[in-house]
Image (tube, rainbow, N blue to C red; front, side, top):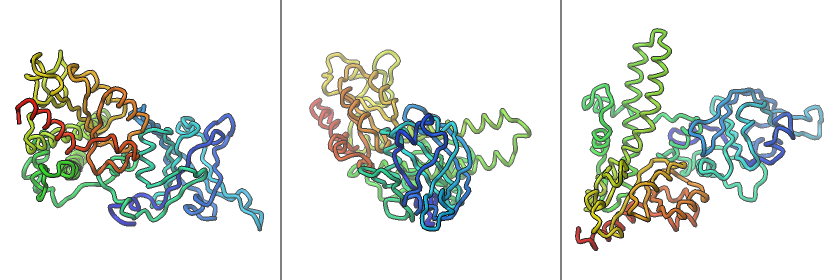
Length: 406
């Protein structure tokens, strides 16, 4: 086990795509998978009883389907001296009932010998992310593809990997107590405004060059802010738990929900905060949350709302940027904003968005922007189409030069 790598959370994983027989309860009353060499690498040859956590994930649902249950690894021909037939059995659960042919099945053995069983919607963004996370290629492979000793450079847990792990039910401890005293002296034991916290995160990093390498700067700032936020969050939660809830179930649930909601909303605001600094550093004119039409407020308008609402300002020289840390189907919300601008831009930190989704974006004249270091999670064909942050700022700069603003 090596801290900061996948081996910290998994001793091994085995992944395959479900066949019709494996996924359809009408064809099989019990869920058993042939113990091919991939599974034997993970579980050996002896019978084992294990506890499993089952999770079903899809792009269409914000909340996963979750269940617990027993797992059995055994040799169906144990009495035979010359032949073995290992099988992996798990019972019918709410998760297994969601399975369909072509879905991804992930069996991950944890360091405590429990097992995480994931069923992931086939050909989805989350399926692509899981395959990227575990560095597994299933093309042309019908059985389980297995990996152990997850400690290569690809297995290092960075911002993108941590996000995917938490999506699949594996919380990652990313706090850094060395920063706690500095955080408390600055803000006390409370959450500051996101803009203040983003500025604080940037102040803790040296040798960042937002003007010459905006892609690397944004990722470094986001990574640092995530660590600092989790450090403060851990401290605040510990203090609140020490106080106790005195049988106040509703109070506990409300506190738990507030923690989850803050985590989700904060990342998007942080990304916008850091992008403001990038735009200022590279010298382009922008306005954040300017009104376009009615109550519509795009995340960023270039040069700004005044120019946008001026009918004499050439619409070809206007640019709109939506910012969403994750996309799913929410990318369509951007299409209804800033109607004067036909081709829109969207910045995301989402890795491995499915080709089906990016083709839909192209059809809707939405250009996706992803920090350069995350391009590797996409197919080569997608990478040719993607923009990075540096390229996007250059597009805006050229338009503002034509408009006489730069």
